[in-house]
Image (cartoon, rainbow, N blue to C red; front, side, top):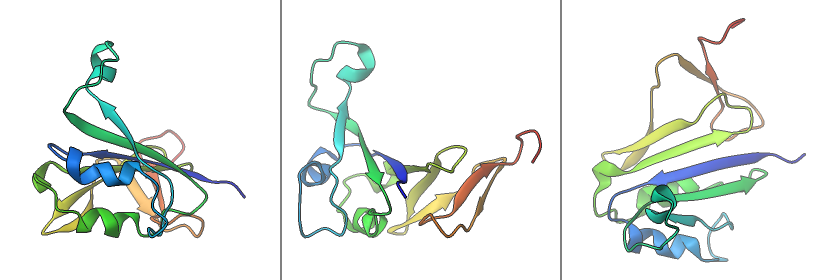
Length: 133
């Protein structure tokens, strides 16, 4: 069974911290690499910039075990700016995690509910305002 999960990391001034996660590393529990999305992608210039606040990755199957703990352990230069957005294929929308006292915790999003589900790592995030729910 093929599954996918998309993860977006937003963090101010974290280019140096995130750079190793853009390269393969057989010592990590998860093996995909983040892709850097710099400011040039937003203004249409496609010109690389020195500053980057966004990294994206897509996992196939459940091979992102250890990612959240790894992200928690990084020496973030501005930990108050760190946001991790996660959307499993069964989710209605992205869930958001932020660092609180050094731990990534899910931030409640109005009109959503997370339910445990056996085929996902974090459960399924559903919109409660969707008609029929």
